[in-house]
Length: 84
Image 1 (cartoon, rainbow, N blue to C red):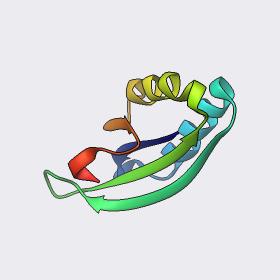
Image 2: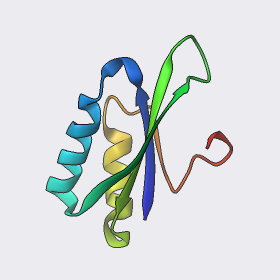
Image 3: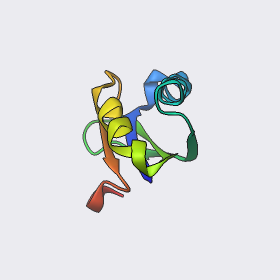
Image 4: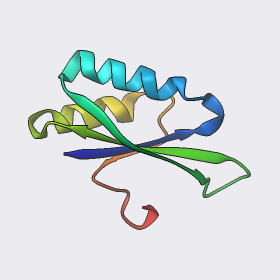
């Protein structure tokens, strides 16, 4: 299943490596499949949107872990709906 999350671009790409590493340690096979920088909905900043591929049986737990990460703005299964 695809999961997508967003974080503030000013935090740097190390956020992605940390998140993927943590998720792999906890849930096994996790692959980053896409990355896109976009202007934030509010303010004068940029957010990064990252898509991950996670096995279906681990997707809900991985999504919960993403949402709990302090640098993650938001996370969702498949897409953010109108924002994507």
